[in-house]
Amino acid sequence: MDNIFNNLPDAARMMAEEQFHTLLTRPGVRIERIVSHGQITPVDAPYIQPVDEWVLLLAGAARLWTASDGERDLLPGNHLLIPAHIPHRVTWTLENAPTIWLAIHFEDY
Image (cartoon, rainbow, N blue to C red):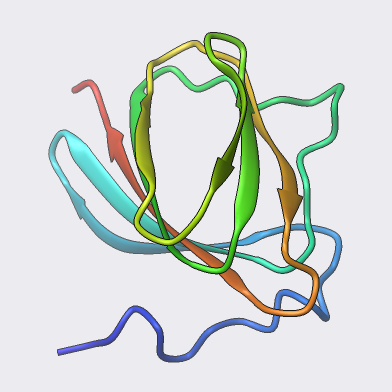
């Protein structure tokens, strides 16, 4: 058994980018932990993914912008579905503590 809060990468030291860790892959689904520590997605480089992504904020705080819904604040327990092909980006995360996300990607096989 493992714990999603154990062995967190020091994203503060790696300020250049969030840290992604795949927890599980199975046909049709990929589950990952994302750790942010002050990182944001550049305005000119939003994520545009070919699959649906469901995200749950587990710890910390963040602000997420999607082309379909605009910007929203996220606190622990908040979750949302980002449909495939919708531009989205992280516009703010805590700088003094890790923000931990659980992301489930619904892959097409």
